[in-house]
Image (cartoon, rainbow over all chains, first blue to last red; front, side, top):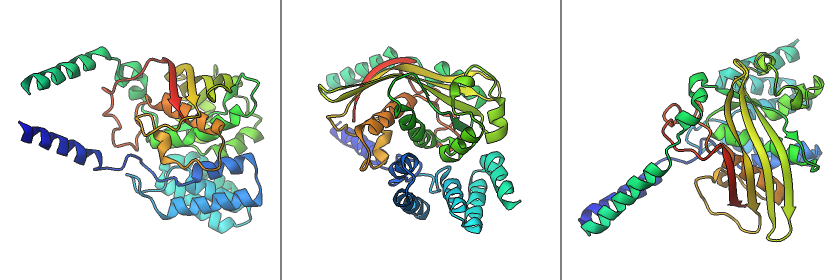
Length: 114
Length: 220
């Protein structure tokens, strides 16, 4: 009986750590984007940009892909800063990864490419 | 030993009978429509606390993404809202939302109505009275709706609980107020059926849910 209980506990312990709890890794994106939204300064922009880099570089969530909106936001920010080509390629990456974004992001791409 | 096991089994059986409202019954329309893309509408703020709108607007995307939805970037959407003078969601909540489907590709729009925001200095608690309404842009139906009062105790740090979506993000440079808004989102949206990108998509109909009208207390 005791053996059975130990086995059950063991299985529970294993199953609880078998998969990551979250779909994506966000690092400090939430804070950085909030600070940027609140106060658009060169400093908050730099922090947000660093945060984008982290999120795009390494994903440890269960999906192992960049979360919705990150490529699009980073791309949009780059375009606003005059880096058109770099920004456009990120907007296109968003559409590639999330085809449902085609309607909205696709329109932005068209406007910029005009 | 046998008695203990029997006792445990009894407790489990009773516990499972006590709460029988499920996501599948409470939010059946979510399973019919299966929205994949959500547009976060600028919150409707009926309080005197002006910043509350910003706190909620910027913190809703993350929990929805973690639920498995594609969320239209609030940053990019805001530029459109502002250029179209569509910053006041009051104008849209009772009207057709098909335009938002056309412009943003959104299947559903999430409205939040902040009814009260108060902070008590005793015990450092923020109490929020709020309603969340997810409406289909296609049929205009309400797909998900919860409202109520949540008190966030900012003096105590919460451990990791089931509601603890916020544990995945780092709270360093933000105030208790933004943490309270995030806690509130995590608490309320916990009951939202999982979206397309979640491994539990379409398989969570039997998950039990809390009441649509809630009253709760959580720690920061």
